[in-house]
Length: 304
Image 1: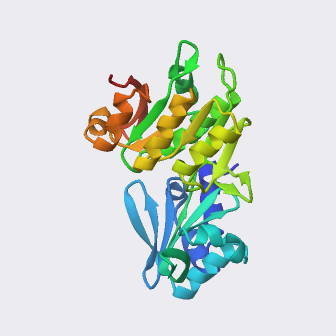
Image 2: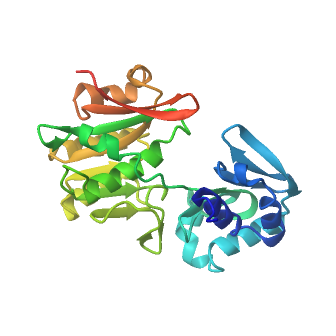
């Protein structure tokens, strides 16, 4: 019998770990492997797995040298080649995984240049849910044009997963929708999960990915260089992001973005985002809610 694809993703994530910890991770029942979101290592503490119900300890404590080994395995024994993302605290890994790291920052001229004495690590088990955007994509158009859209949910609600699949749907086209040129600013490498320039996740055939670049810098670059019809970004958090997004809207480019907010009510309570709403930069919101243990999606008109 063919294994569940989510179990296979878990096994691939566990394969990044040093041998002793890998064996401990593989003792987790398959029913939990299917739901696992992270494997987390803290020096001197039991390794944990993050499940929808919370963190669960496994029968193995991570040693400091094993964190170093994890870093070597994740970079395929070439930390120098991964220096740019390592100093940002993460490593993209072949196969669509991402390893986040903590340790002692090496500061030079006010800028972090490296991490040493690693103290903790998290292996994110990124999963694609292809198809979740197909029922929504055609609802994001008004008078034949893509209407700039926000994806809303609390942290951990599935915004990035939905963003990824909507980018794929818009890029490849779906029944009744022509493909669009999509430009993705993947600031933290969590949407396309590029490895040596190649997306490890399916973000569509007509998607151009600007990886590891701040949104405030990346959006103007894409406007100048790539002639996009839609620009997609994950997690608007800074005022500089809003300025760049307003610039794109003024150029007639559609926008698809995520924000941490449970619903429109919470969004309106955040002064940072009120200007976007008042200027009608975004016209629609996709709200993600939990219903009977499953994620439900609704498309709503934004005010003003």
